[in-house]
Length: 328
Image (cartoon, rainbow, N blue to C red; front, side, top):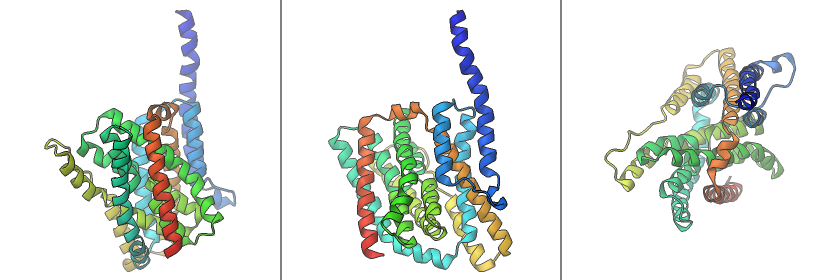
């Protein structure tokens, strides 16, 4: 009995310490060091810190962390719209539209067929394909209830997508620079080949401000494919008891923010402040996402789902890179 108490004591003290470390990290991430001439944390750094935290400490605020990553991401995307022009957005979105249509359809078809060939759970392979084809965790969260996926299928699908999403944020900006990609090329490639909106915006911002704008617009356009995919899912699986479709309403607010910035016009200082705060929120979002990716999540994924996700990622990453380099 006494030995059990002794073993639990360090765990309890570590859990208490984790709360203060978590709070301190968030405060450091939002502090405007750059306004004092000091380097501020970037999105990749925030994600890396979150991963280290997840592997060292138990999550002290699981519900807050989960909801915070979701709503902060949405708020940051809307806020970034106040620094964008509708004219430029339409130009960027138009150039990426054909890539979006082809890649979404092809990834869904390849994913389902490869999953069937691998004898992978049908719903798991479908969710991984949806997450790769559209917008990562958001697509899985939207399609999962329509598919009536169980907790294990959702957890595995989200886990594998989050793992690759984290890797993408670190490797894409250096790869873009190594191959001498332009802002338009990198923004388009990142929006198509990176799973989740958070890492798309983070990678774009790490490359350049222009690439961030292009990547955000194309990714938000891509995210709207959640709606038709949900209807197709409902038809394919033919379940009358499927949950209602989750529509990404924040994208409409993102468009509204661009319209206000373009045609109404806010004072320059106001729009710059909104964009600055939005980027800070994105940095905190990436920390939240990294902090949620524990060893337990990694172990839960399994080899076959991870293999499917990596294979689909290579297909969409390489093919979109080649097309972007040849056409833009």
